[in-house]
Image (cartoon, rainbow over all chains, first blue to last red; front, top):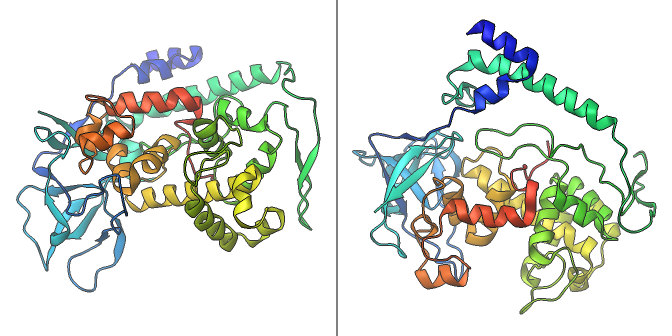
Amino acid sequence: MQKMLHIGLAFGLVPFVAFAQTPTKQVLAGYKCMMLAKQWSGEGPVPPPVPVYDAPGGGAHQVGVAGGTVIVPRSAQPTDGRLPMVRINGEKAWIDATQVVQWASKADPSASCRPVILPNGRYGTDGGH
Amino acid sequence: MSKRDKRAPWIGGRVRLVPAGVAGILTGALIDAALAQQAQSLNGPPVQVIPYASEPGVPLITINPGTPNPFPTGGGTGTGGAGGGNGSGDSTALSTMLSQSWGAAAVSNATDLGVNPSALAATCVVESGCQNIGGSGSVAGAFQMTAATYTAMINAALAQNPSLASSIVPGLAGQMDPATESIAASEYLLQGAQYLQSQGISNPSVLDVRGYYNFGPQGGAQIASASPDQTMASVLTGYSASTLAANGITPGETVAQWQASVSSKIGNAASQSVLNG
């Protein structure tokens, strides 16, 4: 294989060999989709940002804000009022449990949501019916 | 860059990435060398030299409207984070903006605020074709901002970079001065990208920020982290079917289809980073 790579390198072919392999998404087993309780409908005032923290409890630091969909461990229970979650970059964070509700799509009530790691490395979702 | 960024599991590990990267660099160098040999022909209006950076201590920079744009060829340079924008630089959108008399000033304004000029150019291309036109309600200008958004963004931009104040058309009249509105639009892009970063998107692309623009902070993150085959209706959880329709989303339209429709308007700027550096 190494010899083939050297040959490929000489002819500038290696990038094509590497990128010919189709990236795939990976299911995040043990996690589920939730969503922010205050969803923006596309009209009127945008709800205030929902902070996410580096830990449960009062001394935690805010590390960012939540997107509309929130990925949480399927069996997670609140700790000091906060649920663990996975951010889009894969980092663990904590969100106030009162800020999230069961996932549902208003325009497509039969839709489902499944947490995945996308081919581009982002932690996100796919879905179906 | 995180360990996850380096791993690239779908390619099969770091070992195979190294020679691929070396080959890519060599190939890129050969392409650059080849391009350097090509003559560039002028298009658009006659060349007019317009100085726009005359700050004491700063070298005078000029960009000539109608000439090939001054950024690296090949669709941009640099690399983004995992899933993020792919560098910044040349784009067809940028060439469109630079063909306007105010294009060079807009490039300067974007750069001063840390925004990729191609991202700004993509905004005017998709909003107005980079034409200084009116709109419905208070929407106006080449970047089609509402009066309220324009006012908020121009104030934020000037607070961030007071030196820009010397070149603007003051008051709401600035909304119809494309060079001035470009400052507000750049600030809006900057804030959108920073917001997406706060949601964990390390290097937001122009396409990511278009999602933020069109569907708000929650929807922007939902689209940016959605599988391409998901429907827009299922991803934008807070939107009703009628609101989606009002935003031009057809029943069953997927994220990939929406992204393709945006990309068809802004071309190769779509995958570039919004933020410079």
